[in-house]
Length: 266
Image (cartoon, rainbow, N blue to C red):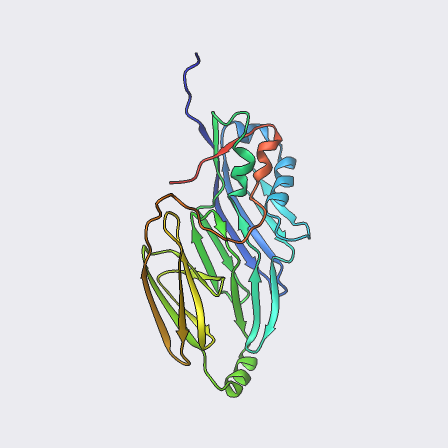
């Protein structure tokens, strides 16, 4: 019987930085580390092809601007949907589910000797006004919504709106849980989320290993509504549920003749 050999970490996703343009397109810089057999076996042309497939978020194919064995710069067509709103332009981005890579790699022919981590250590999305949101060690990049304020439109809206907007302040135990307001990802706790329309809104808190918590709160005009909650441990380990779906990052690398199995970072 051959001795057991621990899998070798062969692929590590380091960072993903996405910058959204005014028209909703985006540029992305994806940094990763290839080691050992992966770096030596995968042709750069194959890597480029799978990068396009893995980061797909719309029917429009992405364009690789440049790439090498340590990273790639891409042009993401229609990454965000834009809508005119009374105060400016609202952007809602596509989502990416990096866990899709694991599905393609679990049955790899060499899964016992090669492993990979496809969840970027840091994922950053920056909007046209410079506002950015950042997630760390997250297996899912959820759909993000942000309004770029047009000062002229905002001034008109302020004078014509009968009720000023309110805000929601969320604190939780544990910290850094995902906060969804009316099913839209708003950020992580602790945090204050302004620009909320007065009235009842649903706040949902999600975190790995904890039960999802949903609360209906009433936002008051011109005021900040506080929400402080403790999440209960899940009896069975859970993953973040109902996260929006999208193409996995480089999931098909295993199909290029050098299969892998994904190991989540700890």
